[in-house]
Image (tube, rainbow, N blue to C red; front, side):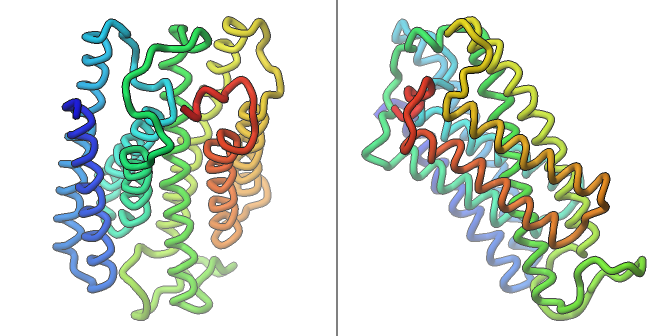
Amino acid sequence: MILNSLILSITTFVYMGAAVLYLGSLTFRKEILAKIGSGVLILGLLSHTAGIILRWVESYKLGIGHAPLSNLYESLVFGAWAISLIYLVMEWRTGVRSLGVFPTTCAFLAMAYASFSKNIESSIQPLVPALKSNWLIAHVITCFLGYAAFAVSCGISIAYLVKVRNNPGGDFKKKTGDTGESTRGIALPDIHTLDELNYQTVMFGFLLLTVGIITGSVWANKAWGNYWSWDPKETWSLITWLVYAALLHSRAVRGWRGKKIAWFGIIGFACVLFTYFGVNFLLSGLHSYATK
């Protein structure tokens, strides 16, 4: 087994350990478990980064020489890395450690699927002609950082709905200061903190996805001669963009908060998943190479 594959396989189980620790901290209300989970997640991100760099170096040693962002395996690996990074940055900025279950579970599942699925080719392969462009790195990185932010947002949305369910009447009220706090339920931040974190994360992801679509259009023009071809991947990327644009518009113009935005965030991430997995496996198009 090539060293980078071994490191990435080990990273998969590190993420699983972090997810279990974060879950334990919520279930048993033990802050120490969340702190350990953060440390384990940082360790996982470091080993993950090392694995990606080694894969990049090994591609040059094989005479192929390209960034590890070109197929389904590599995009899953990078996506898991991006989710871990964005969540850790959020955790560092806010000091909130109780939201780590969903991001670490997503990272674990993506890595597990990439590492152990028999349907995914994990060896380093030469680039197909359409991918031989300097726009590849900019397009993939911005899109997947956007997708990762939406994954974190989905986790926050789920946490919000769990918080409200365990604190009946705790959704946003017309009266200011009504946070729906109660001694019942798991140890999550108050609903205003969750709502604000959700908004900030979606905004970050939306901006990155916008840049990703723009760079992808420039890349498409160079590779196929036009900026937009209504390929299934392009179409669903646009649908995803429109869903999150509607979320941000509803919050800014209509003043939506709370449950409505949380459900919007979950629906948006469902669109992200279909854009990535559904289009790859169910619909054929110019992006069909991503299934290999």
